[in-house]
Length: 142
View (cartoon, rainbow, N blue to C red):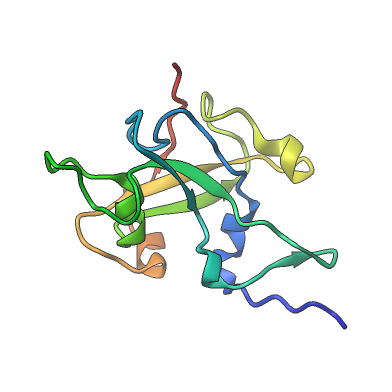
């Protein structure tokens, strides 16, 4: 029996992104607390390539659970992502210099990079994709 993709088409490009595991938040650089966030939500559906389910990429973000901020009111990126105020998109093509290198080896020769959009209000992913202000992730160094 053939396996059927159930992932919405709008999320398929994000599945080409690699997982990024860092010792600090990939967006703001905060060193702790840290969580691995699924860029494509676990319950969003499934995507298959050559009959094998594609693993959903993750990224290191600050925060724990879905908390939006710490005791001092500073935002946690993990909470912002779950509140639809922090979005990610995969941009195929050339890697941004200093942006975690070129992902081409992982994607069969196709490079690219992740970008993020941080918003003041919760916004659907479809609406966020139409907005300006997307920024490539910085490469954090210790």
